[in-house]
Image: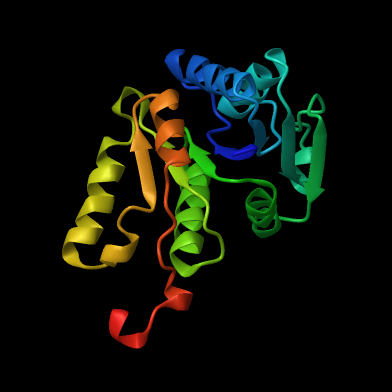
Length: 193
């Protein structure tokens, strides 16, 4: 994995552990020689992950919609700051430039990015690992819901291991490195669906 898309919140929660986590993840990726592709913002966890990577000498590529650049939240300290027309183009660029996806704590936008990465994997638009860092138990309920979707039958057995979860970045990266792509829907036969 040469580059990973990092999905995370643009907010800074009151609990300082979240911002520190993002900074530490950026630094860890840089220490491993893994470039960061992220939302291009300078605020919240997004800004912290970029700063952590840059402080550790890592590559940082930001992808930001034009209207957010105009709102003056763009991080111009990135190695490359790519301005796009909107969110769909942004998510396509994440996929095009990355070898996998890491989701840190975040809100609605982070969830949108995570679920789209999973959906695109299931369909076969990419075959890269999709990881979720469940630091501080933040994603316990989401992981339980994902398991419930599988148990009820809304996630096919072939796709139940798309989402890779771990409590630490080291463990998550190890699991992502070991990921074996599944058979996407585009390559399945009707009787397998």
